[in-house]
Length: 223
Image 1 (cartoon, rainbow, N blue to C red):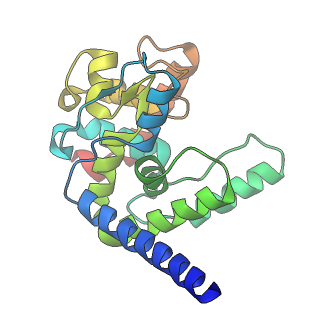
Image 2: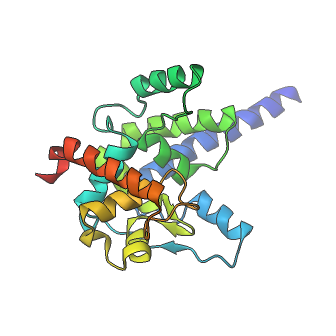
Image 3: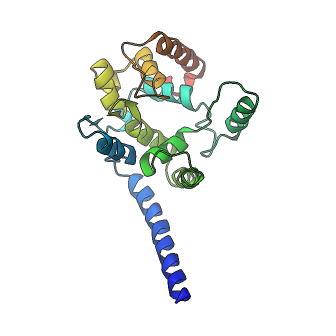
């Protein structure tokens, strides 16, 4: 009886493992139609509209690509999914009582948004690490950035670069200028509370900081 039980558990775990690889391979080529967070938001408030329109990375302003890298993960091109230098710095800051900061990379945020659910449990963090490893192994950096820019929440009910560009600036994502791109990147830490346009004084300061980071980092993508 116990052997059958353990055999069943093994088959379930093996099936989940194979399915996880399959879905990562599929999303290497196919646009992500929705995310778990979109589903959660819908069930929390069915009356809140969901704005989401997938576009290829070629149709997303290079300014926005640069803005999110400059503000969220400046080592994106260098690391393999985990920025251990940033993790160490965050641990030191948090231990010393300075402002709590995170160290999630764009790859980790992509894994969390596309495959998982919002949670701070160790199990969810472990699953995030697993999916981060998978996408770094199976996707290119360009594909990770493309999925990230099309999937993350960029406003209340607003998901992805195209929806955010239309929502905040009434233009396609390909037409965003550097300050508009920086404004969208500025709201990412709390997209349901912050507004990209009109920007509060806090978002304006953060936007100016992001533009400076883009100027320092900019030759990466804008030449």
